[in-house]
Length: 291
Image 1: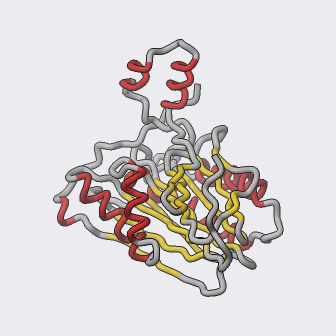
Image 2: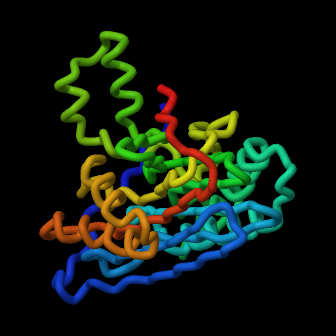
């Protein structure tokens, strides 16, 4: 069993109305195959530990990256910034003809070593941690990789699908339920259910989600990367409804998603950040998801 590391949800809360600081970066390239937007909301926390990056690499490469620093470990904000910067720098320099799934798996292990090597204030290694999700679009092909409990969704028309798992102790609990070793009730009420069992900053990174074969995008498909502050406040149907309402304005869509999560939480709200990528193509786009 992997060692459990949970996020600290007991961060000091200040007055909600005074904690609406946001960081926004919106960019668009008319020659790219995708438009992209990032939005970071501090929620009711005192510190922003989410970090987002999006941009264009060589050729027709467009990417998005989201990291959520772990508040229960020392300086999660530093870990998330270093991981997102290292990932973004590498993808910008990536040859678009490379084997992208192999490139991403090697890159995530390299960046994990960087985060693990970061010393804490006491000089101890392995004290910093962050989740990571990254999505890369080349032409109409989408590849992704994920560690932790930040998520990647794909929205097409009236459908939305989460393509990543939450790498939490719940995975092991649910496996015990399937094996008949634990009751569903005990699994659902286990106090360590949400503790992470995979993230960047571990000595050995063994649990990852990725696609080995590219997902083929259709015109108008939207890829959403988000920290847990979003999906713990909004249901998948809530998220899809907001995306559909603002589909033609990616900047506005990225802005309102965290704000809806903030409003719905009505109290203690984690950092909430999103990255949106919208694929654009002039051909027909009428195919549903392959299930």
